[in-house]
Image 1 (spheres, rainbow, N blue to C red):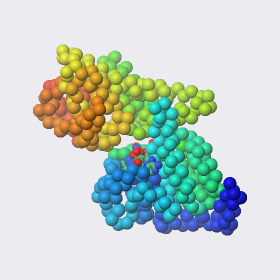
Image 2: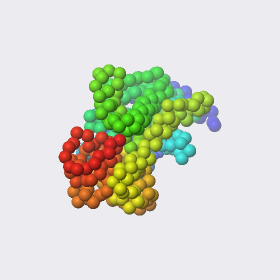
Image 3: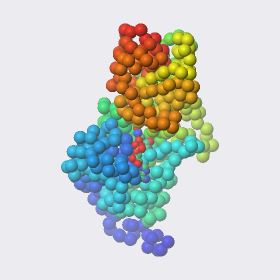
Length: 454
Ligand SMILES: NC(=O)c1ccc[n+]([C@@H]2O[C@H](COP(=O)([O-])OP(=O)(O)OC[C@H]3O[C@@H](n4cnc5c(N)ncnc54)[C@H](O)[C@@H]3O)[C@@H](O)[C@H]2O)c1
């Protein structure tokens, strides 16, 4: 490394650094700061759109060239940004997608929203974040604010990202600004969108925290500043561990209630009438998506380095992961009562997305349940207005439209995702057997269908 490289940017260009904070804050509050959002998926695109709505010019970066082309045609691939909105933002010059990372040089704020999955070994796969940060560092310019939003293990920002910036001679809080701010959106949720959910910001220095908070205040009503990136990273993980554990509790509770011949949902609703100290979670066929099945493992993994074995996390995982198998058993028992067996039965799966209102099938328990049923000889078909086609048993399987004739022809209708688009009353009137894992049939009456509920 040359002597010049060893100098910080502030040392190479004395006098500049004092004004970086001021310059950037002026550009942020005037909405003239150029924003780059890396990763244009479920998280990155709605965030980019929200800043466009606030009057910022935003470039959406993605390595998926097909996705970039689609976005530039005004076709949104996420439920939280409509095609019409995207097209309008694009035509008005607020939004553009690209795969060319050199645009980072002209950006004042760079937000990273790339995937953080698990490896087959269940260890964190941080390779997407690292590949992105490599590009950011390559194009880094003084005075930029870099924010990581991808969910990750505590310490990622300070242990992994910060040294890469420091190696280039930059000093965080002086000539570049670095923070973590977890994304907390719930895709498909119309009540709480990006702008309605408070942002947590934790910078590697107080100046970094403040700039990141100032940035998000331009689009959200409430920003919670915390003392470090680690606190912000952990806040996100704790939220998702909380969900995972409580869903597991509801799932196990439903198994207990079945033994006692009581509806778990009726009990949970009764308990939820308590106006304090209780938050209802409901049983289901298992957990899916890019967050709840994955994020808790990030925390458990990190703790192994401190010789600490997390206990709630693996227990919740074990219970939640047993649910698809339990659903298969429910179908088998229900058919058996009707003197039918799985082998040769016609089962129509209602919904394959991991939750209502979205077309996301990542980690969806529905896929696992369908695969198990197929292996046991079931003729499986499915309907999902959000998922036109899936790969099932190595072949393409297309969603079917539900009508009375299809319902009558099934031995079992298996409700796996309670999309609002489905006509549950029609199912009740036309099907003979319904296994309902989502409580979709509650409150409905009529018809002759036998209903088995989770
Ligand atoms: N989906 C959710 O509900 C949700 C909610 C909160 C937080 N998160 C977190 O947000 C992060 C992103 O999740 P997502 O659901 O938006 O994922 P996604 O798969 O929908 O989108 C990620 C995008 O990043 C792109 N990408 C991958 N590597 C890249 C690279 N090196 N450079 C540029 N683009 C790259 C992919 O092509 C993809 O378009 C994850 O850490 C996730 O855990 C997700």
